[in-house]
Length: 369
Image 1 (cartoon, rainbow, N blue to C red):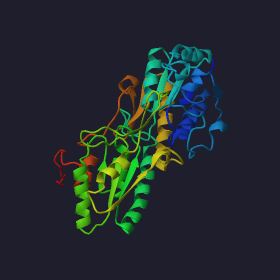
Image 2: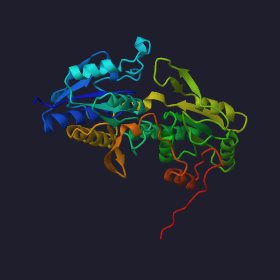
Image 3: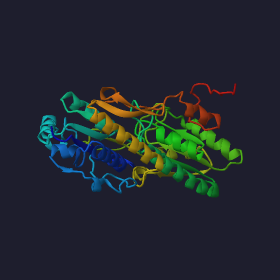
Image 4: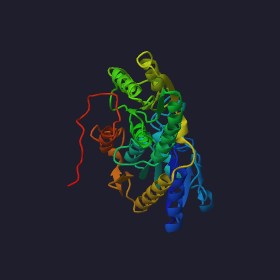
């Protein structure tokens, strides 16, 4: 019987911590069971176009703190609808390439799109273990995804920097974060930086209420207001702001611009000058935080452990601060949004943070026994 052979790929958008996972997966296999590790280039695109290369120990050394991914990635290479071939289903060709390489397992590192594709390939017979990646923290079944902590840190630092300008010029400063259809980044960054208003997709905002909070601060001697808004936030009865449509992508909608919409909505309703800043892809780049490096290392090792035991069809996850697994079928095509009764929602409101509406569950206060 030959050496255990495992493939690894990074799918979807880039994210701080991807290299830390690649390193952990590869080193765990190489050092613990003397396996052969094969890296697919540019995610599932490498499987479709038959591009792969061996990963040796030296290939994954010194990459723990490095941003991006040494393997490359693609958020357009869905084997079930391959856009470069008239959206043809090339999944069987992917399975054939997997078999030709004589692989025993595949570790896929990615977000909801990658996990959905992985589930489809599992049903076709490819033994897969998934690793949850996204700055949006919106994957079902895990309390945290690596990359999220780094994105929050970057967004919070940006809001901190906007504070000084807001105070100096008595302005309303709006910062737009990423997050797609979930408000986790805006919520955490807003709380971390003391934003006065946090607007998230899960709560439709009333521009009249946002203006009221700004005016109240103007009249109360605090002559500035900080607003953190998630790119997927929308006004009552309105729609999310779409910046563009990419028909070549499995998820063609590109959100963006709600901060400028809100700025226009507020003009004439308050005295303060208003400025909007879109943070954009800065949140996805650069060195991962220590927390994300640790989480990525733990996820990568756990994925290698599951694959070595030949327990497939799952995604590793963090639940109750413990590593575990969840079936890929429970993750595929689902989004984890912020619950309105989330502890942080209550904590933010308890210290005076507005969510742009009066229509939220009653605040609660946990008193010591």
